[in-house]
Amino acid sequence: MTLDSRIQFALDQFIENDYFATRENVYSLEEIETTGKSILTVTVIGENLCIKDFDSKNKCNFLKRDSTFGMQKSVDHIIIKKNGDEWSAYLIEMKTSVGSKTWGDIKLKMRTCYLTVQAIAVFLGIRIKHFFAYTSYEKEKFIPIATTTNPRMHAPLLGEHAWDSKKDEWDANKIRIKINEFIELPHTAIQMTRSTDGNELIGAIKI
Image (cartoon, rainbow, N blue to C red; front, side, top):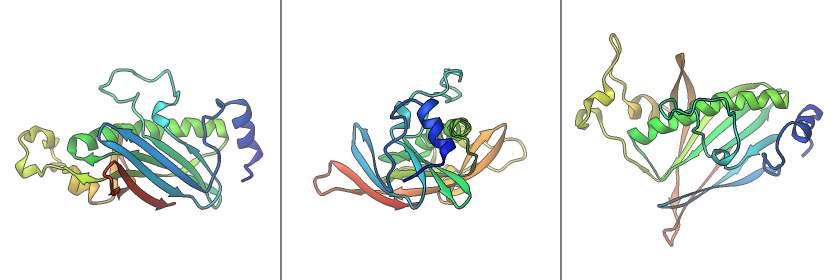
């Protein structure tokens, strides 16, 4: 798979060796949690770059370390893909279950990576036109607003309706992240299947 000379120059001279995975059209992305291992097979059509285990990679050291802002958080894997003359980024987070609290954490990860990937793109000499968010999971554990024991979690701002993260985002196939104002990214939930021995979650997508 031949890359544009500008991108290759960046990979050779700007970016750490092995920061990006060996270029393929099929990637096996993994995440290990205390509850087991998730394996997501991603088939990519066209020119692409993949950063596996992005959460363990070096990133922008000037970002705030206060956990309140979540600027040290990151998704598990990133794929940058060329679609025609435009580049798109696919931000992939892998979970065993997703509920309101987990979703809030995922939103912080997506926000940081939305910004970080654009910084990486500058070094590669490309511009990311579109962003797509993905979350793999086995079980949903959202708590309906009507039954939550902490109604302040969903308290609306003055003049706004109460925000239901499941109904307004998860079920609506989008994720809202705040960068001064809120922006919305398309979001795809990938339900995984547990293996026969019960030790792994297995799934596959094509992008």
